Length: 288
Picture 1 (cartoon, rainbow, N blue to C red):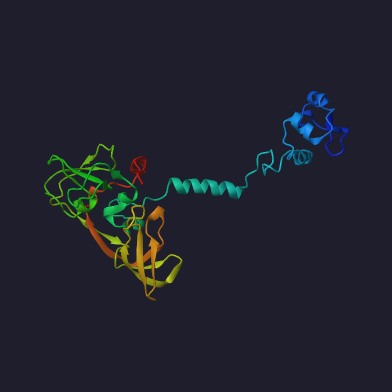
Picture 2: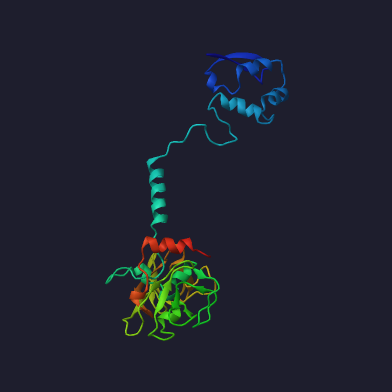
């Protein structure tokens, strides 16, 4: 179909071949405005800015797009590599291994989890119990798992104090993972078996994943900020250099131990199993 199109450069009418659906302007409207002889008047009648009109008209003849948008009017075709990267990124973010210390399966342990200290993993996840104070160490607000005594009227412990045998061992406690959790009743700690955390702890010998030749000793976990509380470790290297490295922050670990160190004691059966349901309940109550 022949379409009447007005040329801005020559100021003349031209007959060009094209589909009427691809025309930027409708023919009836164009015929009504064909008396306009200047760019500004033509742009004002057409609803187009004067500055963008020359570029718009030149680009419409070739790609049916404008340089202002930086892309064509057609959907871009996704390559196999781009599609694979998007799907992998989604799975990586959705199924990232948990960085809190929890019991996994009887007789088997995730070294990536056990390299962290047991008493602070939920604290890293940002779980805090507002208006609740630990009666053992006076932490306020209580962060991580809340251990509530079922015998005493108003008595709560943090994970540090609970695992260090604070309060009466014959009392029954309820474990609460979040503020709105109903809690799960635990057996008394009296005569219960306990174990020690092993892995990247203070005095452990480690090396970087990217450099297996240089070794160092973990000095301590960094505790000066809530966001990185015990999720970064300070290392003294054999060449007298020092540095701070991730050991759980944002799900990343820069270190690998060659000689594990003993960490704090904990009751294995009293810790939650790392399932997606547990992680979802923690993330839903996230308070950074």
